[in-house]
Structure formats: structure tokens, C-alpha cells
Amino acid sequence: MAQLPMSAEIVGRIEESPTIFTLRLRLTEDHAREAYRFAPGQFNMVYLYGVGEVPISIVSDPSGPALLDHTIRAVGRVTQGLARLQQGDRIGLRGPFGRGWPLREAEGHDILVVTGGLGCAPIVAVINYILMRRERFGRLTIIQGVKHAEELIWRERYAYWNTLPDTRVLLAADHGGPLWPFHVGLVTEVFDEAQITPANTVVMMCGPEGMMHAGIKNLTARGVAEERIHLSMERSMHCGVGQCGHCQYGASFVCRDGPVFPYPRVKELFQVRGY
Image 1: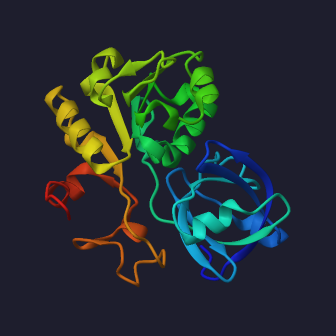
Image 2: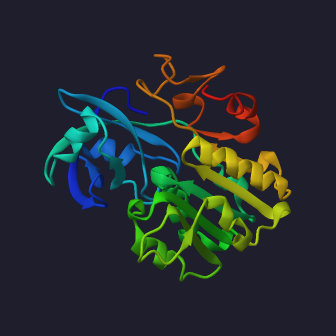
């Protein structure tokens, strides 16, 4: 885990939507590249020289850590600056930080992935991980919801995943357009199509907290045990090591003790509106 930024070169750039882009990075120092390892669900602090740094999830598969993909929404000073960079430019990376998804514990079980908005980004590494080790897991169901149909990124990726054995993709938009072929309504409304087996399902969920509240209520009513539900929490993370206090969540720090938490650990605070 690096405390000082490591130099990284942008070796690829993908425009996912008018405001969302993916940077493919390669650490420039051989020793840093050889030593770097991460787990799905961890994040890097991405540093734009002279401007600042932001926490960004790693969306690539950990079996190939030489290239690190980060999907970013341009919403603030640092991310808007990152949006102007091109292939060949250099930035800084600190990390990886945090605790990732419990994939070892989930082996042998069905996996239900539930995401909303750009909440899909922190969990793409999970999907890649499972698909590259398919024999270790049961059915994989991917549920993604967006507010507006045009906000859905990675349509080709979802379409490809939906063709794979024992894998199903269910998409929903609160507001669909004339060409939207999927469900129109809340993401929880497609849970019936998921054919969930409560006793054998592990849930990995990320997205707006309102969506996660509704998802947890729906899933536990179906008989999914609370300890089988895992959440990736989002807070203002500035240091990555639990020292600055910006991301304190009760007695925990999201950057150090998360961002992935088993639901029972955060249940009491998660139910407090506005916390």
C-alpha cells in the first residue's frame, strides 16, 4: 500500500458517456508494477498533479494488475481535470486501500449483484473475477438500475455477460426512453425475475443508499439472511488510511474498514436517515 503517489501513465482512455470515462493506467516504475496487488472492491487515490486526489474504484481484474482501469464521473475539480487528460499523460496513484468483497467466502454460492447508477463501477471487478473463475461459483445474476435510460453505460458488456452460462443480466430504468427495451421502474421490481434462492445466495450491492435501503428490505423479506448481504459504502475519503476523519462512519472509517461492509456491521447507522 503506497503512502506517496506512484507514477502512472495513461495507456488507454474510453468515453463511456458524455460525463463518464475510463482511464487505463500502467505504473511506470518496474518495481511498483511488480509489487502491486489488489482485491476486487478496493480503490486507489488518483492524484492529478497540482490539483488534488480522489478515491476511485479499480474495475479491472486482479489477475492482471499490470493494467489498472478506473471508471470516473466528471463532477468536481479533480475529476474534471482528469477528464481532460489523454493517452500518454501521467498521474499519481496511491493504494490500493480498503477492504474488498468477500469472494473467497462466497465460493460455492449463487451471487446476486445489485447496483445503481455508477455504483456498477466498484463491482465490475467482482463480475470479472467470477467469470474468470466460473467453476468456483453458482449462478451469477447481475441487476443494474439507473434513473434515466441514457445513463446506462457498458451496454455491450451487459449484453455479452447475458450470453454466458449460468449468468443473467436484468436492467431497469426509472425513466425509459422510446428505444429502452428493458424494465421501466424501480430496480427492486425485477427481483422476481432473478429467481433468488435465499439459502444459497450471497448479495453484493453498491449504489445510492436509497436504492440499497429498498434492496435490503426486499431481499430480507424474501428470506435472504442479513449476514449474506454486503454493501460498498461511499463517503468523502481524503487520506485512504483512516487518519483524516472525513469518512468516519460511527466507530468505523469507510476508507480503512470498508468500503465493503457486511450489512449487520453497519445496520444500525444505515437505518439513520442522513447519517
